Amino acid sequence: MLHFDYAVIGSGLAGLSFALKAAKHGTVAIITKKAKAESNTAWAQGGIACVTDEADSFESHVQDTLVSGAGLCDEAVVRSIVRDGPGRIAELVELGVAFDHKSDGSPDLTREGGHAARRILHARDATGREIERALLEAVAKEPRITLLENHMAVDLITLRKLGLSAMTDRCVGAYVLNEITGDVLTLRTDRVVLATGGCGKVYRYTTNPSIATGDGVAIAWRAGVPVANMEFIQFHPTCLFHHEARSFLISEAVRGEGGRLVDANGKEFAHRYDPRGALAPRDIVARAIDAEMKRTGSPCVFVDISHKPADFVRSHFPTIHERCLALGIDITKQPIPVVPAAHYQCGGVVTDANGATPLSGLSAIGEVACTGLHGANRLASNSLLEAVVLAHRAAHTLENWRAPSEPTITELPGWKSGNATDVDELVVIYHNWGEIRRLMWDYVGIVRTDKRLQRASARLRNLQQEIQEFYWDFKVTTDLLELRNLATVASLIVDSALLRRESRGLHYTLDYPGTDDRYVRPTVLRKV
Image 1 (cartoon, rainbow, N blue to C red):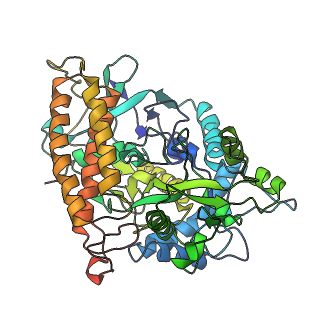
Image 2: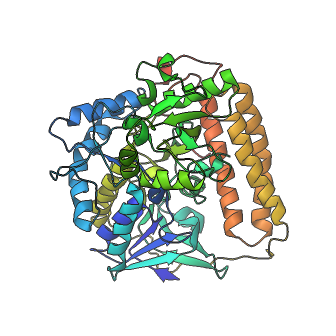
Image 3: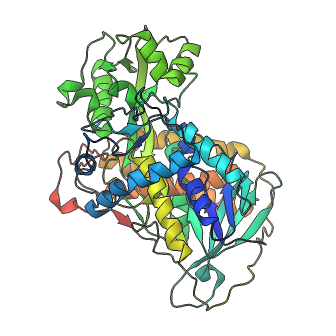
């Protein structure tokens, strides 16, 4: 059994930032199911939204966030996170994050959809990778941090699961799979922090890396923690449409720097759907593209920035330019074929403004959490802002938190595999994985109906039963655990969508195309 003062599940911006701060007060384990640099953060191109220009204001950023969130943001949370942003950005710079600057030394800010001003700090078009680099270098120098790569959290250990009586349930550790040896470790700690990112891989087409299987939401749900707003899955309007690069994002910053959203004939169409055109909030632009593709029968639309000087394009978007060029697309001369794809989970594990969940000893930060910042639709580049602010707050809160002295927990029972055998039918796992992703794309995508949602719900119930039998009959593997989590999260998305009988933000249903004031509230699910 391993003992730590803190355990962080996930190694993106939220998890690494928290670990660095928590290590000042105790030992920290970072549990990451692949290599340490494999995270949603590392794939983030655009940047961090933060007020740093005198021409901008906190109030403007707050209002942009509230408008994008379509009435479901917690305004107090929005205001506090926006105001805390500059201090956290300063800490990232101190750690060595190299944001782009102009020749006069001022930040080189860009603009994205839904923002009234240029306020996106970035490092070319690979901001996440730059942040991840700096944080991992800092983590490597911290002796009190243990990085467990190729380890995947299986489940949380709680007093209730141990059969111990207490006034309130609390988290006392976790079971963790060593993916190399196949052994399941028992980790004892009073402070567990979920920083696992989102669930993009629940959909057939996504901009997310393969690790984004909703693990944190599923783990928390099984431990009895409520989740909220899972119907609001953001589809990024512009994922590269190419058979060799199905998850490559074409950053919103391309449109922010003048890229035009056009059809196959080179004609702009977004203004027919919203006066803000290609820089409207993402839910509107994604639906506009979806509608245009259905209207014309085209498999994609295009983002065209070829009218800008070639040097400008190459210097501002080197990653996108190089990747597209390798696929035979010169973005300085040709439009980029794009389609919408699942991108960001706006709901998640219910937390307060400091990342604390209703389960004592468990916090959640970053995309896995639902703080009230994003509401029904996340404003572009607010995600990294939320991650770094909540990491700071959670570290400060847990530093001063002490677990109750009763009952005393010194040892935990080890993992028991019982009569489980090695999985001998991997084809079933892969088939179920593929079926879930196709089902979610077809029935629970950008445009929904009650009939589609009910079909999805019925099939997911059957799939969950099959997967649960696999879980008990066979030894756990990463593939099996991810499938189990995918099925859980898919069902939570569907159940949430069925409860919201209106169209708001990212949830658009043909059966209820208008908004309804009765639904100006979060959709909260609690395990019975």
